[in-house]
Structures are given as structure tokens and as C-alpha cells.
Amino acid sequence: MKTHAFRLTKGNDLKKEIENYCRLHHIQAGYVACCVGCVYEVGLRLADGKTIFHTSGHYEIVSLTGTLSKDGVHLHISLSGEDGTTIGGHLMEGCLVNTTAEIILHELTDHEFTREFDENTGYDEIIMRAKC
Image 1 (tube, rainbow, N blue to C red):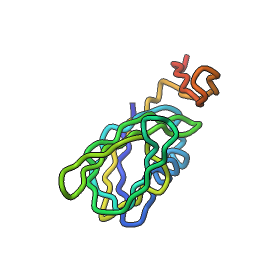
Image 2 (image 1 turned 60 degrees about the vertical axis):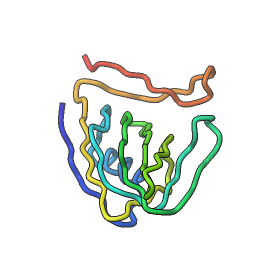
Image 3 (image 1 turned 45 degrees about the horizontal axis):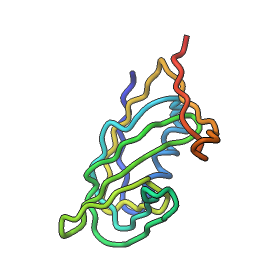
Image 4 (image 1 turned 45 degrees about the vertical axis):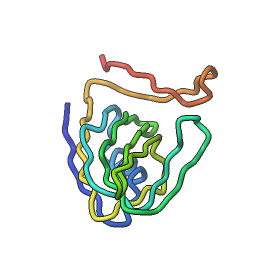
């Protein structure tokens, strides 16, 4: 396993930058170990799998979890607003970092994750393989 740590700053798109980092560092398989920070624009897909939720405001990142593959990322985020109300869902592009996002990723160097279309779900689902 290899650990990656980096920081995003104001205006960075959280999802795009994690994808870019994975691509630049040739991460074939991994997961988000930790992310703390805040955003001022929110972009989520909600649990019905269809509704896209956008809003603006001050939100703390209280959780970011997900898998990293050579075919892209699958990330879920929870955000806490100024009144403590928490929202969450599938991270979409358009979730913009406010002051900072401190990110730690774990790369699984002995695995390869890919994504293949699954007719049952209608999504590209992860295929996890150990490298021989």
C-alpha cells in the first residue's frame, strides 16, 4: 500500500481534482482514507440515483469516502451546514473547495480496480482484482 497526501485550495473542484490526481499518479486501485475541509458550492446526486442537488453556502466536509480505479472514482460525501444540518450523497462535479480540502488516499499497489457496465444496475460497477 502507498499513501498519497495533498491539499486543494479555494475554487478547486473536489471531484475533478481527485480524479486528476489519480490520473497523474497512475493510481490503479485505492480508496479515500481521509478528507477534511470545506466547500462553498455543492453538487450531489441523491439516493434516488436521479436527482442532482446543487446549493451554495458554507459547508464543512465531515466525511468523504469512496473507491479509486483506473476508470474513475466513486465518491460519497457528507457535508454539515452553518446550522449543523448534514446533507450527503454521490459527489458530483461542481463541489467547490472554500479555504481548503486536506486529502489522504491509500493506493492498493497489489490490486487493480476497473469499472464495467452492469445491466442489472445501469451503472459502471467496480471489478476488483488482485495482481498476480
